[in-house]
Structures are given as structure tokens and as C-alpha cells.
Length: 136
Image (cartoon, rainbow, N blue to C red; front, top):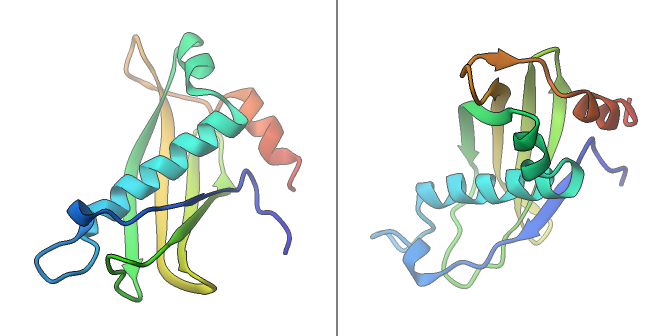
């Protein structure tokens, strides 16, 4: 299977505090897992500290999650995230959460960068564009 642009993956332990009153992984946990995947992507391809030293601050504008199958306490899910689209100032992140080989959740996030001082949107950093272009 070919790697997607800037793809990262993580295994997620399901903790007792991740379970809601119905005995399944709470919806809010998936948001945390998406954040973990984004941080892994930043760490792997363009460290957050380096970007922030240049004045860039990554922002998520929207998140859409589609739950296909509930996860429970002893499940061992694994997530993948990649950049599916990169524009001048916005990017689209795609994610899939698997239980073994089955996709149990999919997500799409739209993001951009802002200037830390002005709080105004900035163009996607050149180093991000260059890494993304290698997959095109």
C-alpha cells in the first residue's frame, strides 16, 4: 500500500476514562486522538517548535467525524492521518481509525496557519508545500 502525503499512524490505548455511560469510547476521545495524530504529523515532518519560532501557529477550522462502529474498553484501535489537499493557505487532513483491518471511524479536518503576532491567516509554510509536493 502506497503511503499517502505526510501520513502518520498511532496506536491508541483505550482507557477506562475513555468509556462513556453506554460502555463505548466517548465521542470526545476521537477528537483527542485526532489531535495526537496531528501532533505526530508535526513532529515527524515539520516540528511545531520550529514553525512557531517562525511565527506560524496551526489552527483547525472544522472537524467532521463519521462513526461506523463503536469501540469498547479492550479494543486496540490504530489511527492514520495524512494531508489530502494543500492549497495556498488551507489544508485538508484525512484520518481513519481502524480496529484490526476494519475502518471504524473516518474524519476530515480543515486547517490553516495564523501569524502569532497579528492572529491573521498566513500562507502555508514553504517547507510544508515542499514536503507535500514530493507526493504529487
